Image (cartoon, rainbow over all chains, first blue to last red; front, side):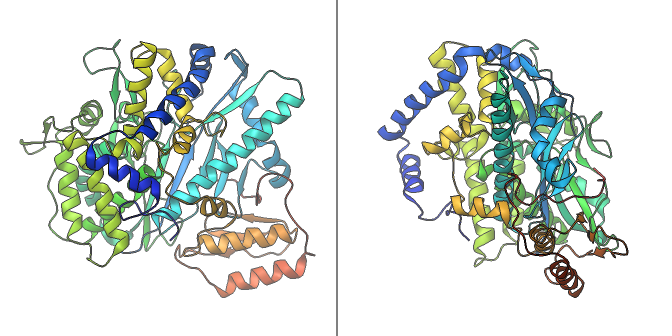
Length: 62
Length: 479
């Protein structure tokens, strides 16, 4: 099986998350990642959010 | 069933907009553009691929991808992610053609479940169950689990509070508001939690299909995995004949809507017998009931139980630190909180609805979910190689392996063929169909003979260049 373990000792990413869970804190790295992410998201939301949302109308599926 | 076959059907939302966000193409025209390479290769907008999955255009111009039969839930997630990538590539190609044509038009494919007018479309889970298992007995036990499963596997989102049509609040699942019945044969008008359509795609004397249509389309691999892995465990507990949690609800539909809005998971839920329970309690009772079935040494099942427990705990304790980077609803809860604060808007603002759509956009350049993954704020459980391999390779432990071999051989040798879930046939006079009614079959003399015939008929030629790996024509579908 090639997926990363969800629970056992796994990749660095998982271990970092476990650290966060254990301390209940926020790592500096992911806080910075979040700011950078929010900048990226702003670019999507600034321009035409409302018009885009209104354009997305389809018949139901299923 | 210790081994169970399952599959996931995903209907995608489709919108084609100009740079200013206004609609450029109607959904029908956008779908035609999207499917152009599929039709060119398979002469149909309904094909089976080399990975044995089905790719087609469903009612309402919804592109749909149905994974092949899987008996391992991480394999199912890999096959599902492969489908996203195949459609993402088709989207990229369509957008390049539109741009080359000088059109101000960009197609977005959204792996979500509702458009801005409230039209719903689905993410349908299929589970093979034993014909002798008394299907009529299933819902009584399964419904309380499915009604509350959203606190673990919901995609999250924004909906009106129960008492205020104009307000907006965060919910575990928006799909809860689109459920109208507990069990029925309908899929659209009065959409049920469990659909009774009985198409086993296998020997009908041995098998039937359980069709669960209450689930949200999930972006997180962990959320998708938990949908199948926990439901499979609950089915195994029901099939075991052991004593089960008696948690039949007083009203499934009003409860599913209330559970969506109760982020504590602790509010009382009325039971059919007069008592009360809570969403957290229902999930915990089922986890505990299934845990007694799991052997200590079974790593696969242990992983399900441990992950399920973490997910329940995230709601029960309010400590979201694990969930906020692993489960869709909690990832969104954190993200929407950050964005509303930063922009000084409420959850009902159109920018948040746009953000929700961008979360489910499968275009790598547009996807907020993938932006989160790059920062390890959303999970990447499966390796890149495994997802890429799943685009071309069918699951090896089910009948999908046979279908994948037939489609691959027929394409490589340039032999016309038709394939569906149970039958493979060459399109030439006198060709006899090969039927495989056992979903667990991975090797059959009749299929070996068909593969031999394909090789003898065609000169080897390479496929490719169409962008749709392994498109093969297919008979008209029973959707």
